[in-house]
Length: 322
Ligand SMILES: Nc1ncnc2c1ncn2[C@@H]1O[C@H](COP(=O)(O)OP(=O)(O)OP(=O)(O)O)[C@@H](O)[C@H]1O
Ligand SMILES: [Mg+2]
Image (cartoon, rainbow, N blue to C red; front, side, top):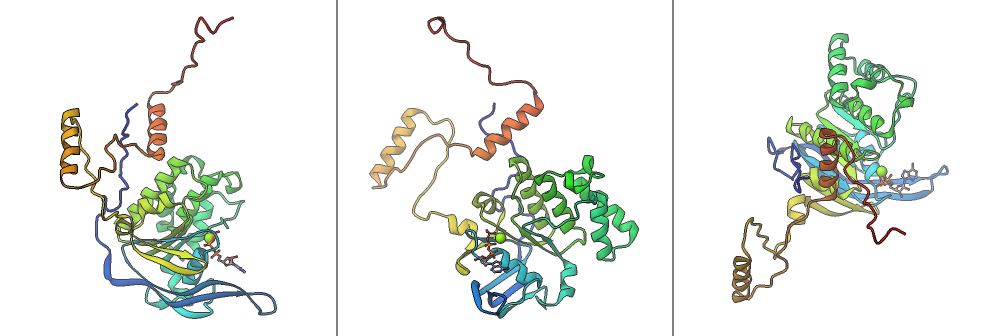
């Protein structure tokens, strides 16, 4: 098995970028956006979001990051106008977030699926296409394209109650794209997906960005966020703790990393000496490791190409036999 698997659409931040985000075009702006959940009697229960100031630009993938209960879903619901802010405001696609008409240009994949369990994939997308008043012929073409995109072709006529978690996530994404939205809000898009499904979802998100769409996604799966997001905001207990470009936030300023192939032992010694001579500290010089995600994907792909058992049970040695 190859140590470094070949994965198309490498998701290293920025490598596949087809276009830069347009910083002049602000798609989402929040000003001191705050949300307090109250109980039945109007008493303050939870301060879920505290004075959030954000600007999200056209053509970027923006990640909302934070532990459970930090206010990610609340923020997304405020942008959709599903919740009203307690204080502050959000401007989305030039309109106040509470204006429902702007949602025609928004796609939304909620945290929990709310799709009708007794409809099949085609009927589900047709239902949402009708809600957006998409003409029948356009709807048919779009439904077909989306079902193929999310790889549900074989299950297009099965009722959603028979779908697995991963399949439900896929039809959820297709539903979020039925109106060809400019802004896509994804709440935990990779939850419940296996590593292959996760990689596909991340590639679709990158493709949508490359088409000029703006994506806001929230997740607490750090690897997913690191792979796809251009900028992130880290929330904790409803407060913005960090905001910036992922590559800049992760850069370790005082470490220089050199990668080389085919260095002899003598050459490596020489490099050590050069570092010493310049009073540097050699932190590591070793063979790089791949990620578990890449290893897993390469094993599955290899197995699909060459089916059959790979790990053969070791025969007991003669001494071991009684
Ligand atoms: N309808 C509600 N009524 C009362 N409190 C709520 C309600 N919805 C959310 N909260 C509270 O608001 C806070 C933020 O919740 P939110 O769902 O925004 O978090 P999150 O960051 O999306 O978390 P997770 O990672 O678990 O999805 C939590 O303390 C939560 O208990
Ligand atoms: Mg949430």
